[in-house]
Image (cartoon, rainbow, N blue to C red; front, side):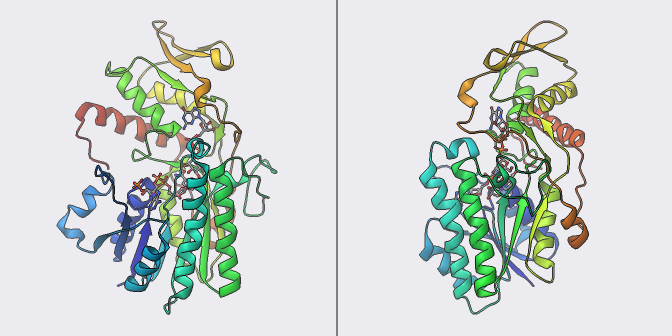
Length: 347
Ligand code: NAP
Ligand code: GDD
């Protein structure tokens, strides 16, 4: 039985990856942090199910090298998936030093523990399309130069290079997955897609009056998280370590995401005004449902991301499965259920 160790198991991707690896017969160990309030909603359905006796949790933190090296020494996993991060780009401007420590130095801590292990351990690094930032090419691939635009992206760029460096210097099986945005009903509530779908569910239930956003013109390549964790696993099953882009190949504005999400709830949005004064109105009754606040603008923005995952398709046989419209439908419907039931269990 293969043993996997996942950092960030309580996060969106960690929870889907744990499910995937369990179905493939792995013993899965997830790193969890001590928190004053339990934050294990995304993995509760896994560890409360007696059938998942191969799922185990272990306390730790990416800021603690002695803890990480102790875990690698004790567990001797076959595969390590480093998904832990302060992953919010906007918030990284508020806490740049912490973000760099966890996202950047945290990756070296883990790589170094793996390097010292007697076992040949495969390592997956959760790299990000944010490293392309102020893009040098219209469509970004593994060969596009980096131009990071936030403390988060700068830290991910460092983590990318240090992963590649450990691969070249110490012959580690270390792979970077350069993943474009991927979403799901388990997405954190302060990322734009989930903020939109949860707000819409609350608006139609009468629990919220309006949705306040930042830059409506930003464009992203949005996929569906369960499709992407399959790609992570494939990278570690390949016969040699390499770096791969996972993306849908399409790009859409935040504005489009808002319009389509409201459409699922049979509401048509009409836009009026410009910049911070722009509003989105319910066409049928004139209610203001969307506002813009400069509070959500970023000091330096990534205007557009659009990925080319041809290499992952050719080498790994990975392809995006879920369309933009299907993703929106899944998220809006899940949030309508969530708000209706309140005791929502992540699916
Ligand atoms: P997420 O939902 O924000 O989850 C982040 C995870 O990291 C959580 O389990 C969190 O634990 C953990 N974590 C944060 N700080 C930590 C620390 N100091 N020590 C140990 N664990 C810590 O992120 P995600 O969307 O699943 O993304 C997974 C990874 O992929 C991240 O590295 C992210 O930067 C990267 N990525 C994501 C996307 C995307 O679109 N989702 C795209 C490209 C790359 P708590 O639950 O305790 O906070
Ligand atoms: N969060 C947020 N909240 N973003 C907003 C808002 C808002 O109210 N209004 C507009 N946006 C814009 C942001 O300025 C950004 O251009 C875009 O919506 C997407 O923002 P996020 O959903 O926060 O995601 P992100 O693209 O910055 O980062 C995500 O994707 C990266 C991969 O490209 C995160 O998951 C990162 O961890 C990941 O690396």
